Image (tube, rainbow, N blue to C red; front, side, top):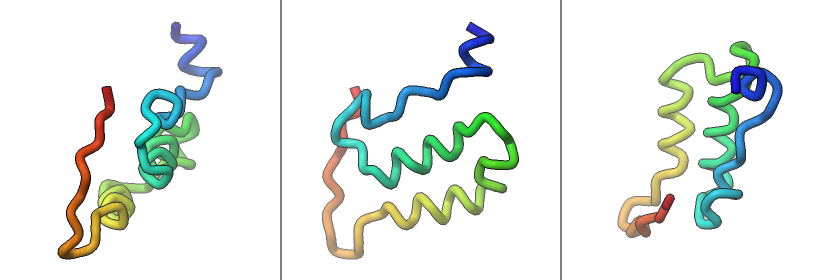
Length: 67
């Protein structure tokens, strides 16, 4: 299992749940990069990316099923 962690990429979220927005999938994959220097630099960078995924004011967000 340790060898897999070191050598294999994680399964993309879109392969596990079709309704995952591509931008969220990309962010999660970015956060799971094996090389630390390829991951987001800090929590602020992640928060900024997540805020870009929020619906516009007045728009209703539709709940997503991740099961």
